[in-house]
Length: 273
Image (cartoon, rainbow, N blue to C red; front, top):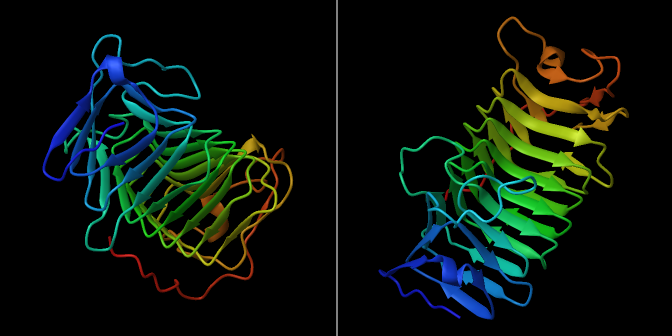
């Protein structure tokens, strides 16, 4: 429906907030309000593209109740391919580059076809990538200064070789079957928040460094043990590692995090977007 040429900027007024067909974005794309990629649509975002989320005007923020967010967001019901390169990452950010976390909603994938992100940078969102009942593949990317980096529910998710830093929560999920491997999760308030018991999950070979007050936080829906062995964990000065887990050690209602054996040193990461 729309091609945005390199060096050009496009914005979507309310009349074009639902997009269909084969879509290709390149250059600078400015979104105001909730822009929807319809069920039959496929959006490809070119390397080096900046997707900028401006504050919505009256009538543009179509969806504000959970599972959506207040502020401009990209709602994907079709398919999204955002494949940057090491030299030309794709940037998703607020219009004001110094705005606080939560200044835009997120990329909201709902019952969409399998989507992929490579060499993407997400900053200042409420929930930068929010996936529900879909398949998502994220690699070689950065989530920085968001309220939540990646949030998902009942989703087959793969996250590899990705950096999460300076978020309130790096990764948060409710059920789902995640493969979370070879990531650097550092300097967040919570590294991992699991609100309901995962299934068929694999969370290993990650480095959890200086996430404080909790490296991992279990929610009240998690009553069984959670296997997080074969990860690297930093410790806080004067505080044993287990005190950085909010689990059955602090609340008898919750399951316990099984973290042994641990990696003795952090894995070597290859991402440099």
